[in-house]
Image (cartoon, rainbow, N blue to C red; front, side, top):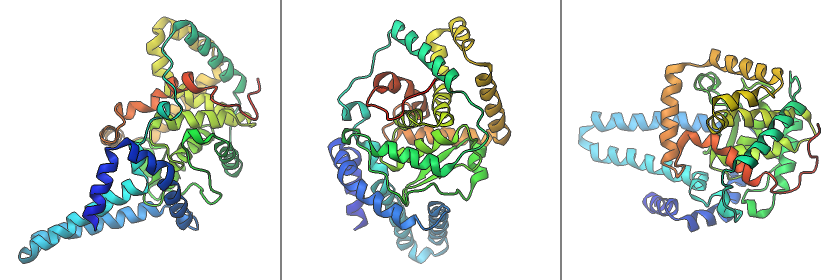
Length: 343
C-alpha cells in the first residue's frame, strides 16, 4: 500500500497538471479536515508528531544492528516508516511545491526591468513607507486574523488559494527558542497544516508574518509568492500599523535587490528620502534578532533549507524570499482593495 502511494506522490511531484489538480481539488479538502482536527489544541501537534517519528525511526535503526537475525525485517520497517513520512508530507501539503507558479495561474509574465518605471515605484515606495510609519508597541492578534482572512476570502478563484476557515488559528511552537536562534519567524507544519508564529515576533513584524504563513495554509508554496500575498493583504488594511508592517517588511526583503539595481550612490540617495524613524526600526529590529541568533546553528539551518527548497522546484532556494519585488511590480494592482492606503 505505502509503495503504491509513494509512487503516486512521486509521479505527482513531477507532473505539473497532476499537482495543479491536487492543489485545486484535493488539497482544499485535506487542509480543511486536517486543520479542523488540530484546531482544538493551541500548541503545535506537528512538532509532537515529528519528535515521535524521529524517536520511532531511531529505535528501528538500532534494532537493525541489535537483532542481526531479523535485520531485513527491521530494515523494511525503517524504510516503510520513511515512505509513510514522505507520502504524508507531500500528500498533506508538499505537492503544492509542484503546482503552476503565480504567473501561469494568473496568465501574466514578469514585468521586465525598466529604469523609469522602477524609479516611479521607488518614489511611491518611499512615500508609502513615510506616510504609514507609526510606532507599534502592541498588536491585536484577533483583529489582524479577522482582517487578513477577510482579504484572502475576497481573492479571485484564479489566484488558486483555498478559502479561509474560521478554525484556522496560529499555533504556539514548542521549540520557540530554537526557531529564534536560527531566524525562523514562522512556518507551516505539514502534518496537520498548522501555521506557527514565532512568539518572539515584534509587533511591527507580526501582521505581515501572519499573512505570510497563512498564505501557506491556503496552498502557497513559494516564499516570494507568500511574501507578495502578505504584502497585499497587509497594505489593504484599515489599520495604519498593519499597512506599515506591509511596507516595512517589503523593504527588509527587497533592500539588497534595490541596492544592487541602483548602485551605492543612488541607493544612499534613495534611503535618505526615508524617515529616520524607519531606519531606526531597521536597526532596532536587526539588533533584536541578532541577540537571539545562534550564528553557527543558523548557518546550518539556512544551508539545509536552501537545499530543501531547491529540491522542491524553488530554483533560487532561500533567495526566493527576496524575489517578492518582481511580483509586486507585476501584480500590485491585481485587484481592488476595499480600504486603500491613507497618507
